[in-house]
View (cartoon, rainbow, N blue to C red):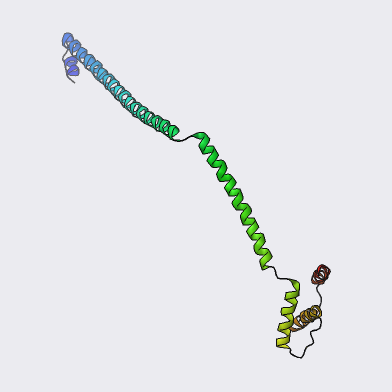
Length: 170
């Protein structure tokens, strides 16, 4: 504003030049301040990066020491042997479980003759006058009575085929 006033008055070229030089110098100073501020921020970021790297180096160093001590404590051959033994024990346990299942199946399996005897006993209890000379025939008669009681009149071909296969197995 002062430069504008001096130009309006006229004849004061030296004062205008002097003020213009001051403006140029102050703009350069502002520019240098911004540049210095950028350099300071750059240095600050570099210092933070170096600090983070130092912390990371310490962490790697301590983890390396931990790994060394773990390697000293663990013998790889012993660990492999232990794992191998564990696998064998697990296989044995599986075989034992399989054998136990088979044994339980054998124990729980009821022979056909015992089933026929039980069917005969039940029919005798329910129908004391029914003859039970042939338990298989009685069981078949029981099936027929069951079908009649359930209202099943027609023979299902699938059921008939299954019954025939069952008779062949008996």
